[in-house]
Length: 212
Image (cartoon, rainbow, N blue to C red; front, side, top):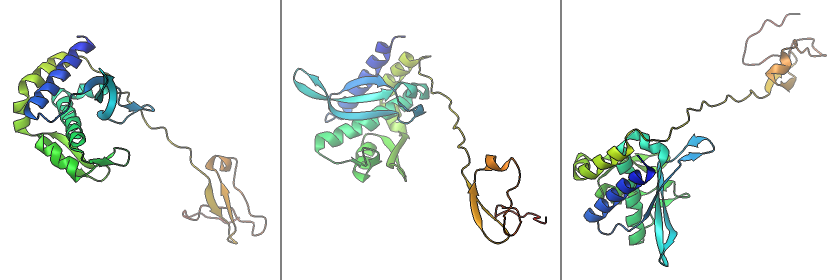
């Protein structure tokens, strides 16, 4: 399968969305990446007035290539999510804030009208988590064709493990309550002794036998 097959299938899905919701605008559909600095962060985006076609500004809808491995229904849900942004844009409704990350109640209302399942989210305001059964049936044919085009083709999301941060300096205390800060690796050479009370500087949260 070629990338053009996937794009054509996504365009057919968008046309079907416009058939049922004529206000949804024409867009330029693209496959991109949801990766940012090696971390998978987004399934797609809506970007108004990004393209110029015959002197007319056209919005961009990007679907992350890494998102293809989630299956046709997930990609269709992303297209309907972006279509909700498109409807808000056409109607002059402010549906997001915080750089496009926070989706407000008005976005949720439009997304539900398009057949999305929307849930409140502490980080994003409202998140689309899937599609209703009726929506899956309504777009069943174009979604199936999208699945055929996507079959065995997806971009791999790197399985990156977070690198552990090196421990910072610890606050240590001696018998006379003096404090110093030292990194744990500096303590491997041996105990650090207070020159006044002759006790070892220790972590105050741990119990030690400090007898000399």
